[in-house]
Image 1 (cartoon, rainbow, N blue to C red):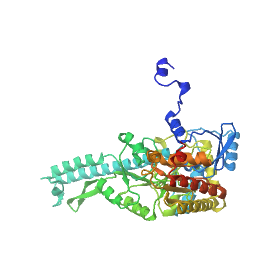
Image 2: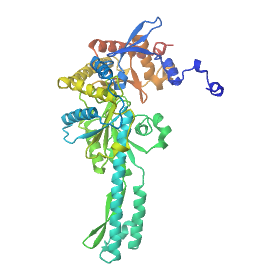
Image 3: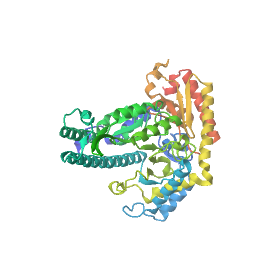
Image 4: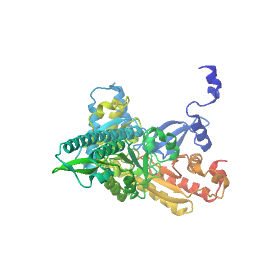
Amino acid sequence: MSSAVITAGAHPAQTDLAEPHMAETLALLGLAVEYVRAEGDTLYHRDDQGGERAVLDLVGAFGATILGHHDPDVVAYAKSLLDARLPVYAQFSLHPYADAVARRLNRVLEREFGEAEPYFAVFANSGAEANEIALKHAELDRVTRLADLRESLRANRARARTALAEGRAALADDALAAFGVADADALLEAAERAEAEHLSAPPVLLALEGSFHGKLVGSVQLTHNPSFRLPFSSLAARCEFVPADRPDELARIVQGARRTVFDFALDARIIRLVERDVPVFCAFVLEPIQGEAGIRALTEEAARTIQRVCASVGCPIVVDEVQSGMGRSGSFFASAGIGLRGDYYTLAKSLGGGVAKAAVTLVRASRYRRDFDLIHSSTYAKDGFSTRIAGKVIDLLEADGGAAYRVAAERGAALMTELRAVQAEYPDVVKDVRGRGLMVGLEFHDQTESAAPEIRERADMFGYFASGYLMRAHAIRIFPTASAVHTLRFEPSIRLADADIARTGAALRDLCGVLRAQDAARLLGL
């Protein structure tokens, strides 16, 4: 390292070089903890004397540990894979274990949705990448349909031109009026110009307000939070955001973005203009339960509206089940609970069983483009370790007739009962409790008008300070989201015990007492 580089900032020995701002923020919030061990719903860190301190983990790696940390069956299987010296990376070869995972997932789709049509699987490493694969494939499909339309339009225009020149056909009476031109040649030229303009327009993406689909170049365009998205808005296609509580707005948005072109159709010696839709919509990407928005579940009515409008314009639906899938909602796919059927499904997080990075994009067979297999690839996707782990996790969830899903529903109901009891005792502090299964949100009343100036001034980070208090006072790990800072989100594993729920309720009652008293010193650790 040159001396110029060293003197440009703080000395490396005095400054964290891996995300230093994050480290400073964690310290400010009282969350600067290094965890050294994990098991079930418990994380362990060292105290000042070097001893282990247990922390109840209700974050659940934002939905990645449905089976808990270091599930014994997953760990034993992972060890057996490593001991067997199975190849981890063997690209451009056969991967029957990946096909086995795809078949397991298709059986689940058939059971939960009654789907007879198969879905092809494209493997990835993360939820953001799985969503980008869905977008990339949907755009390949759109561009292919666009090319087919362009070829058809040009062929039909050429036939019309020839038929007119040879006197074998005449224009329909209203044809010239469509473009406001005086003769056939001008009409053909105007149609060609309009075709070039409309068929070269960039794609339109659709997502819900409050959405979160990743922070990569493409997926961040679908993430509603402006602080995540706007600095990078010039890097990808625009996205129209639909209010989740007003899905009828979708029809208006779609109509505004819709594009059509005129085709020439020869019918009994008459050439008529036929309006055809341009495939301008790449995809509608949505979560059946929004995590980043503060645990907000899509309704059945909204799902029906979205499916109807998208079908009317041929817009594929990408169902992002990265957080809500893998049984967390009480069924393998949360979308099954509201009858939302996707052309694509994305899974990640818990698919890796808490020990591997695994993700997959499922594509409906009638939309699948076979050449995608060759034009898309990823070095670490479909590797021999994480993909086999994914298969093991699916088997564990499906065991005993899907007992894990029933447990998720029951544990989630018990947690919500406790949180609603807290709300009933502190209605002036807790605004709402909502969720499904083991995706639960507890929303506090807005603190921007707090009587305590220290709380009021920090209201934009309120949930993080509340999390810091729960960590300091009760050794409970929980976070809000960057888009819903007054809502704590709970995503523990199916191992969550009654004692853990009771402990959580007691800690929240203490926090609510602090907030009712507007005790800024205790809340903020001043």
